[in-house]
Each structure stands twice: as C-alpha cells, then as structure tokens.
Image 1 (cartoon, helix red, strand yellow):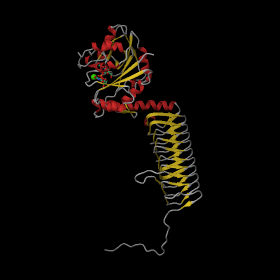
Image 2: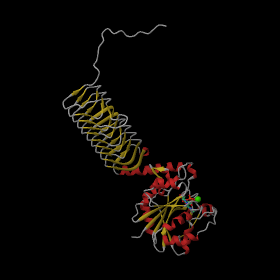
Image 3: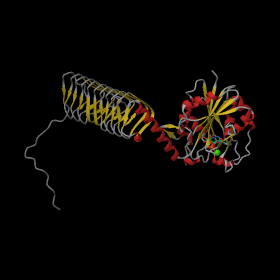
Length: 456
Ligand code: UD1
Ligand code: CA
C-alpha cells in the first residue's frame, strides 16, 4: 500500500485566544486540540504524522511528544504554503500527502480516508463546504463546467467572488511529488503578503490535475477554533454528538446537554446517567448501571447493576456487580470493590480491596487496606496507614465487625470474625472470634455539680 504523510499545521499563536498557552494546546473534551487531529490521522494505515510547529514549539512538542512521529519547526509564519514547504524535506517519495490543521480538531477518520482516496496521478482532493456565512474563508472558484479552478482568499476577492458560499476548509490531499514541484512556484504577491497554500489549486489546474471536492459529513468536522467562544461551542457540539452515540447504544441520559465525556466511554445497555456527570479517561460501564447527578468517574470499570448515588467521585477503580456507592463517596486510585459491597456517604477509600458484601456505610477513611467478605465497618472508622514517613497495611478478615469511631493503627490485622468495640484504638492484631476493646473505661461520678457562672 502507498505511504501516507499527514502534515498538520500548528505553528500559529492563536492571538484571539488571549492566552500564554499555544492555541493547539487548549483542550477540547479533555485533550489538546492538536491531539484530536493526531488521533484521527493515526487511524490511517502506513501513515506518518508531521506536525509543523512555530509559536512555543518546545511547549507543543513536549506536550505531544509521543503521539506524533515528526515535528518540523517553522520559526517564522510566512503563510500556509511556507508551512508545508518546511515539512517538504521530511516527506517520503511518492507518498500521498494530506494537509490538516491543528486548530480544526474534529475532522473524522472517514473524511480523512475519503480525501486520501481521491489522490491519483491526475487528481487531487480538496475538502469544501457551503456555509450560510462564508465571511473570512477562501472561496472556491469553479468554471462553466463546474470544475474547481482556483481559491480566492477573502482579502483578495472581488465583491462578486465574496457572494460565493462554497469555501475552502484548508484540508487538501495530493502527492509528495506534486508538492515538490509546485510549492516553490508560489509567491507572496497578495493582500496579506503571505505564501498561500491555496495557490496550489490554480497550479494543479495548469498541470491538468483535476481538483475533486469532498464534503465533510458534518460542519463541526471543519470548524476551527480561533476564540474561546468558538472553543466552547465546538465542545458542546462534540459532547452532543457523543451523548447521541451513547443513547443510540442503549444508555439513557437525563439531559444530553449536561453530559461530559472527556475520553473513551464504553457502556452496556439500560444504563441511566443523571445530569452533570463527567467521564474522564477510559471508563467502562456494564449494563443496568445507575449514575446519580454530579458524579465524576475517571479511568474505572463498573460492573452490572452498579448504583452510584449523587456527588460521588471515582478514580482508577474497579467496581463489582451490584455495588452501591454514595451519595458523597470518594473512591481513589487502586480501589477494588467486590460485588454487592456497599460504600455510603462521606467515605474515602484509597488503594484498598473490599470483599463481597462488605459495608462501609458512613464517614470513614480506609487506605492501604484489605477487607474480606461481609465485613462491617462502623461509622467514623479510620485506618491510620501513615506514620508521617511510611505507609502500612491494614488487614480485616471475613465477617469481622469494626465498631464505630475506631482507629486501626497499621500495620495491623483483624482476623476472620474479629470484633472491635466502638471507640477503640487498635494497635495490636486481633485474633479470630475475639473481641478487642481498646478505650478508656467509663467512670460515673455521682452527685456531680455543674460549674456555675462566675459573678464579676
Ligand atoms: C486558510 C486558507 C483559507 C481557508 C481557511 C480555513 C490559506 C492561504 N487560506 O486561511 O482559504 O478558508 O484557512 O480555515 O491557506 N499556519 C502555520 N504557518 C503559517 C501560517 C499558518 O502553521 O505560516 C497554520 C495556522 O497556525 C493555522 C492554519 O495554518 O492553524 C491556517 O492559517 P491561517 O493563517 O489561520 O489561515 P486562514 O487565514 O484562516
Ligand atoms: Ca491568515
């Protein structure tokens, strides 16, 4: 199969963002704009991605290092043709070349493929679209036979040409040898004194190469980000699309306008997601999962029938079938909750395992702990896992009971069927079928006189 080199232009500063961060590093759905483009580009077989950087090049390269294959520096931004010219020495002989833009994040793999399919010896591809308001874009000029003959930039167009509503999205596909031959012919004699990549279209025509137009499936694929307003609009449009895909696959959303997916979400069927939930990284939901309002779930797996009540935060955890969580639970990285276990309000769990059917219903901190099956942790229990220097483990065997307001000073073990009396500070291991009580004895002082208020 023919090689494909994908050149992504990302050298501009993005002045209208009013930001010290380069525009292409601003985030959409939790990822830098440029990342979306690189991800789409990487879906093409035998493709190499070249990113042209300029403004804050080091910062961009550091942020995206692993995902792109080559970075090319364009220290001065003299125009889009000049940007592609900078990448020219890195293009492979006889490769198909696709030009994409770092600030046009939602181009789809299908459109990319359609563009590449147009490329052959006597044909190139151009992605165009009709817009109700074409202001600012380059316009597509067609001849009497409706063939594309040139692109005219807004600033160079006549009043009649400004009436044309078919615009250049900027995305084009051609061969590396065509770019080698044609790019050096482009000058900067135009209203902006820039080297325009769009001049390639007229040159192609002069060389009897037909320019075939491809249309995107949706306009959000070709919308660019120039301002924070546009970024927020594109974010909502993108979220709407993902919400629709999720509903199509069998998950109900209380309100698709109040749903945010910032990564990959894999879901079974008959799930329900209430308003204002955020899904980050890779999240997998089983079926019949119910997620209450205002939950944040990152990089986690939730089994079938899990119920997550309002305002619960789950990060990097595995939640078994039938688990009930929250409201107001915080599940931190490394937590594994076995099936039918229960975690209630104001409970924080970190790097701990909870066996089948175990319960931590209220106000507790459990860290670096291993709990067996059917363990009951009373309200206000704390595993003291840190001595100010090192972390230690707590082990609690099957069917144990930890009374309310206990502190378990790790390293410590409560064996199976162990029982800890409320208010205990447990520093020594507790054996099977043993009750540990470690609290001051109660004294009752009879006839006790309350202090009375002093007169001054
Ligand atoms: C360009 C097209 C225009 C099209 C529009 C679509 C040209 C001459 N015009 O116009 O026909 O309708 O895109 O959005 O191509 N860049 C570099 N190096 C440079 C110049 C630009 O990397 O030297 C990058 C920018 O960072 C940006 C992209 O290329 O991401 C487009 O450049 P920009 O100057 O914004 O082009 P437009 O004027 O919008
Ligand atoms: Ca420009």
